[in-house]
Image 1 (cartoon, rainbow, N blue to C red):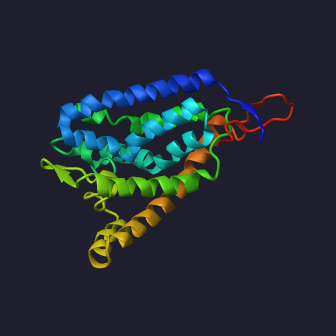
Image 2: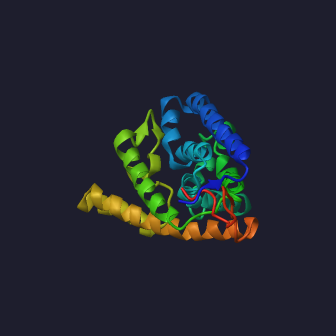
Image 3: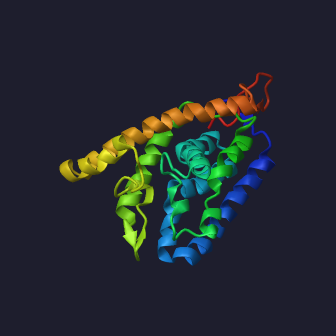
Length: 244
């Protein structure tokens, strides 16, 4: 296997430290806002990938960093689009960020979810010069997404102390989702069992994830360049950084 030198390793370490610190800050913030239900919120994929991204930064692993990015591509991109549309039209076309308009949602809670805005650009800076986003990321994303869905189902309640949780849509399709193709998963669960619900949601989610992968890969090429190659160790031929 080609040995490589990670481009800007100090930056990766700094980003990794920031992601861990940010996640640790979220713990008392979410607990202060909601109590125990707030701690369950930390198992959402968009929060879990903060630690996953940090792990990739510390290990200098392109595939782990890229997978953490791709896993939340739909959540983050749709959240930003949803929130922007709501600001302009007072409507949430997708529903990903609809909770920011709920009466019980505080400004502090909204502030603690703004990693929806900055996480993807930050991961771009880490991947720049280290090989970009490999195609096999789609497979890792599919596997991790199913695992998170099952964690939401078997380790968290759908509701606690009157607060709606439904972590990673493990119990049902998010209650504000307007997409009928996704909402029908609830009927399939009731009529055919939970395993059919998992297959339906996972199939749709990973189809969308594959599309979002192409989107973020295109964005990476636009902003970081088509070739993001690293410096090999002990050789003269360019090698892609972060091959592991």
